[in-house]
Every structure is written in C-alpha cells, then in structure tokens.
Image (cartoon, rainbow, N blue to C red; front, side, top):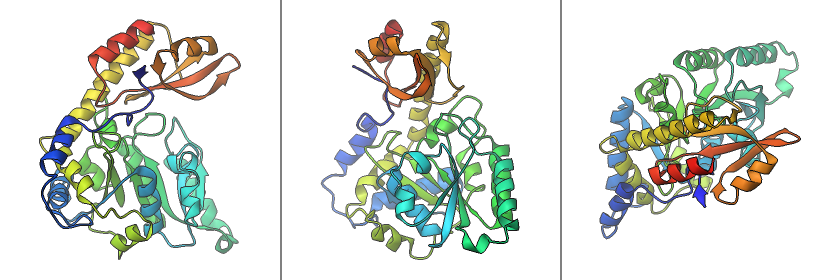
Length: 341
C-alpha cells in the first residue's frame, strides 16, 4: 500500500535516529535537564531570534494543547478557536476535560477571521450577563490549518492586535509548522512568529521526529510553575532526553526546514498530477495536505492500493479525500501514485 494518509505514519528521519543511537549509551540528567535538551533549546532560541524564550519539550500534540491551554488560562476561562480547529473536533474533548470551554467561531478555509473575533469580543463585552459566562482567556489557531491553508502576516497581526486589546493570549499550534513556513507564498518566519504571539509550539511528531513537540514562550513568559503543570498533566517525560536529542538534531544544519521543504515539493508534484488528471480540488492548499473530491466508486478502487483519508461527504456520489506527503515521501512512491491516479 502506498502511504499517503498522514505525515506521521513513519519513523524518524535518519539523522534524528542516528543522533538517538549515538547518544544512547551516555548518561545524563533526567526530566529534560540533559545536555541535548539544553542544546536544542539554544538552537531553537537562535532560529527564532528569541534569546529569552522559555522552551519545554512534550511528547504529542493533544497533550501539548491541553497542557498549554490549561496552564495559561484561569479555571473559569475559555479558549476561542474556529469550528474546524483541532482542539474543537479532533482531540476527544481533551480541552473540555480540563474544565475549559472551547468557543467555536466560523472558519474561512480553515482560518479564523479577525473580524469574526472582534465581533465576538465586542458582543461579549457588551453582554450585561457576561459574568455568568465562561470568560475568554485565549485564542487558538493552527498554522497550517486543518485544511492545509496558511495565515499571512497581516492576518496574524490583526488577530494578535485584537488579543492584546482584550487581554487575550494568542496560542499558535505548530504541529505542522515547518510545512506551513516552507509553503509557496508563505511570508511567516520563525523569528517573525516569535514576536506576534504569546506561545506556540514547533511540531516534531509530523516533521522528522519519532515523537515530540517543542513549546516556546518567546518572551520568557512561561506561566509560573509551568514545569509543575506539565507534571500534573502526566506529560513530563522522565527520559526527557528522548525528545531533546531529536530536536537537537532537527535544529542542526537547518534540517527541520529542509525536510519540510521536501514534503512541500512532493505535495506540489502531487497537486500538479491531480490537476492534470482532472480531479476537483475541495480547497486550494499550498502545504503538504491536498484535498480532492473523488467519486465513491473511484475511492473503492484507489483504496485497494493507496492509503488516504476520507475527510467528509461531498454529495451522495462522492467524498472529500485527503492525500498527505511528508519528509519521508519518496520519488518512487510518487511515481507509483501517479500511475494509479
């Protein structure tokens, strides 16, 4: 079967795996206080031009989202996302499990509109019964979005300005951050992002690591006792080195962005193939996720040899399907897929 259903259906990039193996017999401090985690933090600070950043390593995306949100806002506060936001639909109620309401706004090709956010906050502020409501404390967006679309600088600037006006924190989920930054037409860089949000994370699980996400508080603004908060959520790895070593490799010699760029190259090749063969696109994505409309009959045929995701119904006779490339996608896999399509 050709693997195009996700970007985390593989192991680690060879250079990441090599770094894990070559450091395996060395002893070190535990809980992320090891030399490789410290080196990775320094490399991320340099790449983000954020010398004072507080950086923590967690294992997975859902774990990271719930820990950051619960650690940054008060127990009675809510987080604002779009209706298609990962925390709203794909995390089994993990945020609500911590006691925080997720307020869902309309999405526009997967993105949050600053106008929608402003309207919501104006209406909330003018509501005389607002003290009876969950108080907005944070805005959550993903870059790229669930539909593979990306934000522009202007869009994030506008959202961040509203957050600052109303005293909200802006949290950017970067599970696929490398793919978003390497996409054609992308104008957001790591240093720029560090200056336009309160917290974000750099995804490793989907981009070259066996597992792991790097949470970055770019202004040295981590909440008090955030380390303890991670522990309280069962998210503190005793062998913290396992994630630190991987990010130490990913942020050496620009590896993280180089392998992200490879996935984009493969995705654009796939996009051109789908277009040339007459497939209807559900949305125009510049990243490694491509969404097309395929008839039910054709889905059955393709699924015998290709792994992909049936995303949602389109009409009675067809569905929206997602094909995903990754750092591990090969030319040989692409050639085989092109023949089948």
